[in-house]
Image (tube, rainbow, N blue to C red; front, side, top):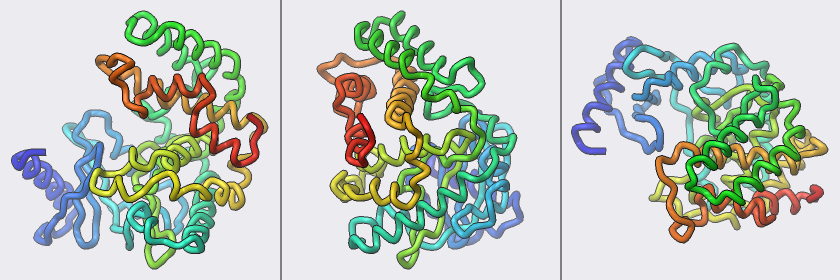
Length: 333
């Protein structure tokens, strides 16, 4: 972002704070974010969404339905006004656990996962408030209101077949997999909250303990095990979820034991008898949501290992690292 854009972004943040009656004389520091303009003061975090989809105004309303637990965001104000929307929360103590994890020993990591499991159980017991259904797109191409929640995936496959930018055989095989296993998501209409973007960039740690869950903009009503798709994806590809300045500090080896610990502390999250099928469908829904938004799709020879076409092809070939994680947990292939 250029210096002029940075000044405009800071002005927006100050206007948001002024509108809530806060003093804006103290300095605001820009924080890294892939989607929003984020500024941090000594006491508050201001997140601004300049796009016309009202994601953060919705988040501000949604957070009022969360239980009064220490991990929950303390929202002091939000707006869904025309032009940009924002949410202001009280700053949580500590830092993102992704920054602390490399220096934590095994016992510290094990304790932290227990605390995360407890927070997730509390979150997943919250009935979905009406505002959570008012969402402009989701990271997963699934629709609980459709005849089958996988209908959007099949529609996206038809669109890609018509565009002739992706291998037709691969797309036909994906459609067969979705049709064969789609009924594993027949309960997708279940209405309890998930976080929806649960990487360790969005989890805070202070004095060795979990101090907060951040950024509920993708929170929505869904089966609790949808949470696993993003979380296990982070454990396998942490570098894809981290800012460039710290991406090299973590690898999948740092999370070898983490899925097993989570399964020990939150067994219900892994208890569905068709969990492997569900995880495959969630993975397809995530990758297709990314693929369908690409204006052009590069040739296969130029695709990196994390390109959605590569990930989908690997899934069809039985090489998905997410599938490998599930097998390591003792789940049937």
